[in-house]
Amino acid sequence: MEFMCALSVDGSLATYRVQKKSKNSYAATLRTAKDKQADAPSEITLVKNAAGWTGVPEHEEIVRGLVNAIEAKGSLDDESQSPAS
Image 1: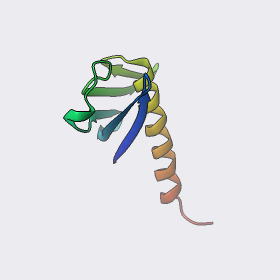
Image 2 (image 1 turned 120 degrees about the vertical axis):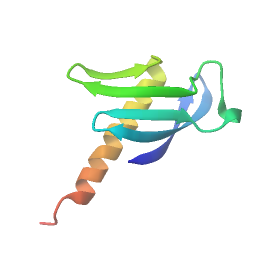
Image 3 (image 1 turned 90 degrees about the horizontal axis):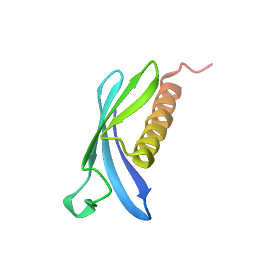
Image 4 (image 1 turned 60 degrees about the vertical axis):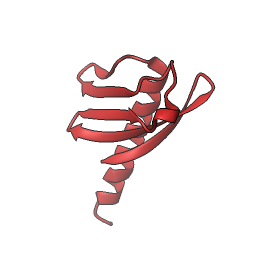
């Protein structure tokens, strides 16, 4: 799975390219150098474990937005793969 995710970070727009690396691991990369902001990391690794999601580096607002997008995208993908009743 790969998709783009646009987030508002402290009032500025940050667009991340999100790529699934393994079953419970994703990499989110800030799309372009012009999008780079001091408060937005250029790359975040997201991992889902028994305790929930963790992001490295931790940036609560961005990690929450990316996790919401991953979970929404995942449930949409699950629905599209379900057999029709």
